[in-house]
Image (cartoon, rainbow, N blue to C red; front, side, top):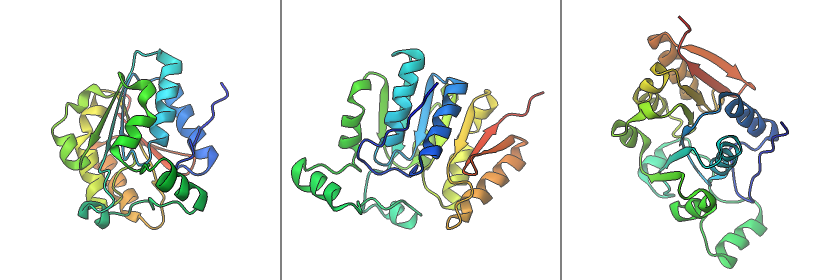
Length: 213
């Protein structure tokens, strides 16, 4: 299948086309029906994932996304977060003066996903807190791309353990990110402590699954 990762004239952490395609191919192979994304940002990955799940399952899928959606939140300022402002002046003008919409906002992401409004649940909040109060065992695939501090990644993973125990998949982004070494440290410790399997994809993503018995 010829998969394409579209950017919808927004910012995305998956800037290289091969990274986006690698993610989509991995999702296509697993064919999850209940998907969780932590770290929605501008919603680019969310929209691509929903389009792919629709291609696989029609409207018989669920997508949940969690993000702070706040430029000034103290939690965000403490994190190693992507730059939310555009370097392209045309995009700055378009969003600020023409459509007057902040692409990194809850409302803007909801609008981007309007085609799948009955399939999506976008949650504004701190993933460490939100996950602790969710039934995470219902998810069969998690794309973890939220806060990049060691403590945040470790807490998110610990809250997601039931996903792996129920034979689901966690795919962590930025495993080898040089300026955020806490990501790799947290993932490696989590996998070792729980006896899970880890597989590195495209020198970027870390796939976490249960070991086959």
